[in-house]
Length: 194
Image 1 (cartoon, rainbow, N blue to C red):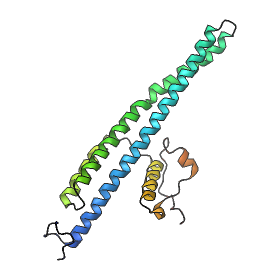
Image 2 (image 1 turned 180 degrees about the vertical axis):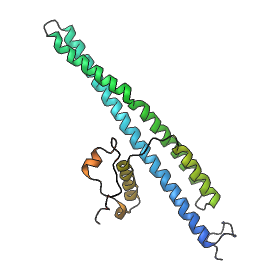
Image 3 (image 1 turned 30 degrees about the horizontal axis):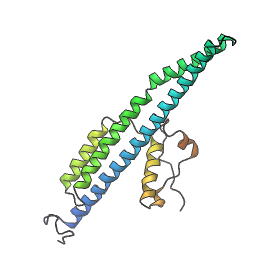
Image 4 (image 1 turned 60 degrees about the vertical axis):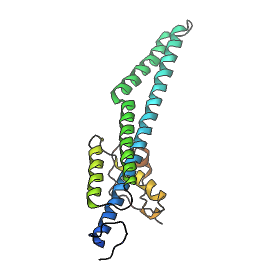
C-alpha cells in the first residue's frame, strides 16, 4: 500500500484516499455553488424590493401632488394613487424583502460551513466527508426550490473562475432573462463550443 500523504492515516488504501478526495471536492463545490446561488437570489430580491418601493413612492407622490394642485383634474390623480395601491399589494403579497433576507441567511450559513471546511484541511476522512455533507443537507432543508437556469448560470460562473470553459453550458436569452422567475428545464442545454 502506497501512502500518498505523510500525515494521512496509514491504514487507508490509495483508492479510499482518492474516493475521499473526490468527495471532498464535491462538498466544497456544492458549498461554493450554494453560496453563489443564494447571493444572486438575495441581490435579485433586494433589487426588486427597491424597484417596487420606488414605484410606490413615485406613484403616491404624483397622486398627492395632483390632488394638492387646484388647477388639475383630480380624477387623473386617482390613477397614480391606484398604481401605488396595486404595487403596494404586490409588494406585500410577494414579500421580496423577506425573501432577500431568507436567501441572505442561507448564503451566510453555507459560507460559514465552507469556512469550517477549509479549516479541516485538504485531507478528509470518510467521516469528515459525511459530516460536511450532512450539514450541507441540513442547511438546505430551509431552502426554497432552486431555479434551473440560475443554477446553470452559477455553475458556468464557477467553471469560468476555475478555467474550465469547456464545462460552460449555453443558456438561451429567454431563459437567462427569466432565470429568477421561472424554473426552466435545463437538462437539454448544450456545452458551449470551444
